[in-house]
Length: 117
Image (cartoon, rainbow, N blue to C red; front, side, top):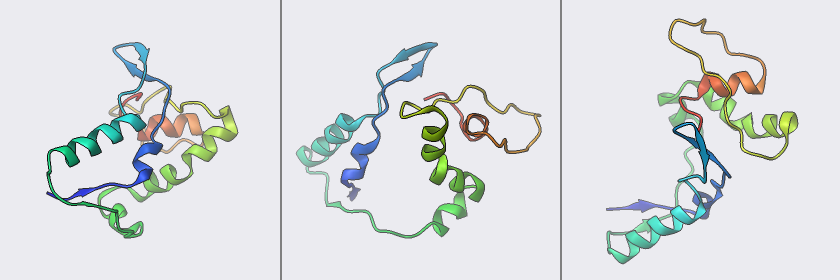
């Protein structure tokens, strides 16, 4: 098995996650990346390699390019609107609703999200 890993995996460092209606410490956190990496090493599961840069085109082959563009700018937009704390969607686009991307960061978070984590 080949495991792709970089120090950037440790950058997912939210402070809360919404689980069953309550805020909890997040499951995905820097320590989890370390735990997974240690398990791969301890289990001698194969090579650990650095990711290769492939640009955005392969990503856009499987994801809506509008969503990819949103993800690239979302954190900066969130910080400008609300400050440096967790960006959690407040609402979600439901089945049958108009397919029009909102203009505000709050609306766009819910438009592209599928959960509040």
